[in-house]
Image (spheres, rainbow, N blue to C red):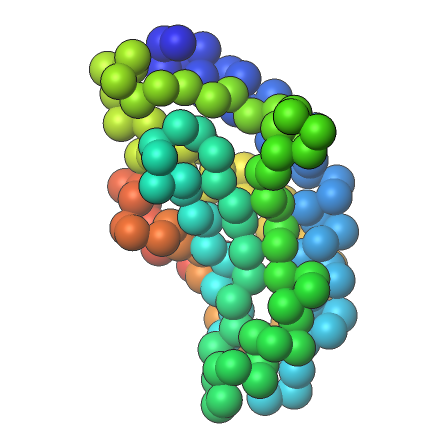
Length: 148
C-alpha cells in the first residue's frame, strides 16, 4: 500500500468515528476530578508497526493513580480493536516490511490533524486546564501539540 493510499483509507476510517470520539472526550470532560491539573490525549501506535493504535486520555495532578482511576472506564477516545475477527474502526493494516515509509510517523501525523478537529468540536467552554496531544514513543513531527 502506498503512503497516499494509506492516508486516504485512514482518514476515511477516522471520519466514521469522529462523532463517537467527540462524545468520548465530552464524557471525560464532564467527569474530570476537581484536582486535575492537566489533560493529555495520547496516541499509542502498535509496537508491531501495523497501523493499529489507540487514543486515550490521561490526567495529571496530585495522586495520578486516583485521578486516572476515576476516568479509567471512559479514558478511551478511540481504540482500534479486533471484534469478531474484524477491526473496528476499520483502519488500514499494513506489513511494515512491504512499505517504504515510516508507518507510525504517517499514522501519528494524520491522527494529530484529526484529533485537532475533534477537539474543536468538544464542549470545552469552561475548561481552564492545559490540554496536550502527543504520541507515545515520540512519533510525529509536530508533537507535542497544545490543544488548550
